[in-house]
Each structure stands twice: as structure tokens, then as C-alpha cells.
Amino acid sequence: MSGGVRARAATTATALTLLCLGLLPVPAAPPAAAAHPAAPGPRVQVSAREAGKGGTVTVTGRGWRPKTLLTLLICGQNMIGGTNSCANGDGRAVTTGSDGSFRKDIPVAEPPRPCPCVVHAATVTGAPATADAPFTVAGHPVAPLPRQNAGGRLSVLAPPRLEGSSGLLTWFGAPPQRRLVVTVGNVGATPARDPVFEVGTSHGVYAPQWEEQQWRGTVPAGRRQRVELPVELPAGAHGDYLVSLKYGGKVLVEQPWGVGRPWGVTLFWILLAIVVPAAVFRAGMAVVDRVRPRPGAARTRGRAASRGAAAAGRHRDARVPGRAGRFSGLAGRLPGGLAGRLPGRGHAPASVTGAAEPAPADGDAATPLPWFTPDTAPSATTAPPTDPPRPKGST
Image 1 (cartoon, rainbow, N blue to C red):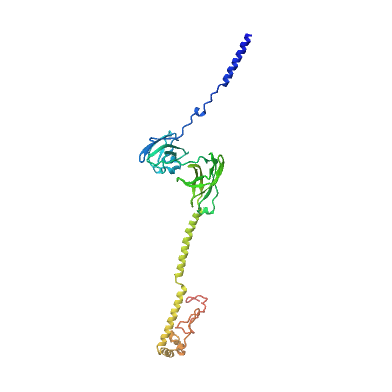
Image 2 (spheres, helix red, strand yellow; image 1 turned 120 degrees about the vertical axis):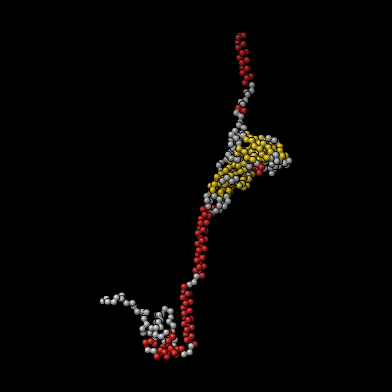
């Protein structure tokens, strides 16, 4: 009996021990973050927390990408309004070393917004990265920070695209137009009502030209929405452009846009270079044709002068008394063959009868010469001999 009691007692003690061990709390496993500490992000430090305008402070940084170009600015209102609240004219640029660190002296300047101020460092190329360090500009005004909207944080969920096409007017230099279509999601706790976006276009190495555009609508918290915003380039634009979308001071998307050359403008200038000289030439030829002398007018003036000379001769003969009688008497004393050979004013028939011969009309047969009689004058209708003249002595 004693052995059985001892066995039951040992079994009971073992069960109580196991029960106590089961009721003890089990230690939790260490978090992954503790096992593998996260890599530190980019950091910025200032050699002095406060300095007056005109002084100099040293800014150091660590954790940046190697060989990266950064900008250093002193900004007011904790840079809530973006770079518009920074002293951009007194900023400095610096390139990180191979280990991602840098050291740079910058002048202290008063930002356009009141403090609290920060020294803001941001990357210029590559993936965006920023870091701020608190700083106070001595003597600069201080004002409360503006209240920020806790909700309405938007992010892009799908690749953007440009919709639309160019028309005939764009081929002649009209401004190219498209619609930037993006799908955004609200990751905030409150809905985003009528958000205001900034659409920028850049060409080549130039900075984007930003334009605010308000989208009418509401993006509920935790939901997505399709957003369409118009984009327009200057007239005659062509080449490679980059369309950017910014919200809340952060660039959300960038979409390239290749714009063709407006060949209609080139064609217009080519036609203008051909048509204008041709029109000037035609106008000059018309002026020359109008002011040049006419051949028919010269002949008419010559005929009028000859007729005037003939009439003057007849009037002169009429003014000399006895002149016609002397010629008629001379013609009567000469042999009959020589009477017809006197000059034109000594014609016997004209002197005897006193009647003037009518002037031949234009186009009539030629008047016989004054030293030929009418019966011996050569005929204008006589046909030329058919046989050529033969030399003397030939048969």
C-alpha cells in the first residue's frame, strides 16, 4: 500500500509541475526591426542652431546617395509652402562624396516667410530625397504655422497617359493640346474635395512652367478616382516635352510628350517667298507696258506730219502769184515728152485745169514718181520675169 501511495503522489506532483509551467507567460519573439535595424535615411545637421543675417553656417549631411547633386536652402514656415517660402537667391549646391556625405558653408539669409525656419536639402537629379534641420534666423519675424489638412493625401496608382490628337490647325502652328489622365488614390483619413493640382511642362534643360488647375470632384478616403487635366503648349511648339503633375508640393508623375513639327508653317513661308516676287514682277511689267511708246502711234504721227508738210506746200504755192502760170507756160514751150518730167508742182494738167489731185488713201497703189509720165511709170502689178537675165554673147 505504501508503494502505491508514493506512486500516486509522484504522479500528482508531476501533473502539478506541468500545469504550473503551462500557466507561466511565454516571452515574445524579438521584432524583425530589432534584429535588423533599418538603414538610416538622409540626414542634415547645422553647425549652429541660430545665426543672424549676413553670417555663415556649416551644413553637413550623411546617408545620401553617392555622387548626387543637392541644393541647400534656408526656408521659412518649415517649408510648408514649398520653395516659395525659401531664400532661393542665397541657396548653395553641393555634390555628395562616394560615401554619401557632404560639408558646405552657406550664407544666412532671411526667407520670404516668417520662422520657424529650417535648412532644407533636396536632390536635383535621380530619385527625389529631402531632409530638413531646424534653424533660427536671428531678428527674423516668427509666426504660427498654418493649419494643414490632415486628410486628402493622394498618390498615383496607375501609369499616366496623354489622350487626344492634333488637328489641322496644329499642323499650321496652333497650340498642341492633350488631356493628362491619371488614376489617384486617397491614402488619407478624410476625403479630398476639389483638389488643386499643378501641371508643368518643360522642354529640354529648362525648368517646368507650373500652372494650378483645380479638379472638380471628391476622392473618398481609401478609394481611387480617375482624374483628367488639360495640357496646352505654346503656339508653334515642337520637339520633346515633359509633362509633370504635382500635388501638395510633391511631384506625382512625369510623362514625356513628343510634338511634331508644324510643316504647314514651313509650307506657308515657302509659298510666300515664291508668290511675293512673282506678284512684284507682274506689277512691274504692267507698269512698263503702260508707259512704253506704241509703234502705231509713231506711224500715225509720221503720217500726220507728212500730210501737214504737203498742205503747207500747197498753201505756199497759192500765196506766190503767177507761179502756177509760169510753170504752165514753161510746160507749153517744152516738147511733149519733157512736159511730164517736170517736178510735182509743174504738172501741166494740174496747172491748166487748176484742179488738185485727190490724195491717195492708205493701202492704195503707190503714186508714180514725178519724173515719170503716167504712161511710162513702172506698174506695181507687173510680174517679175520668169527667165533670169542671160549674159551677153549667150544664145
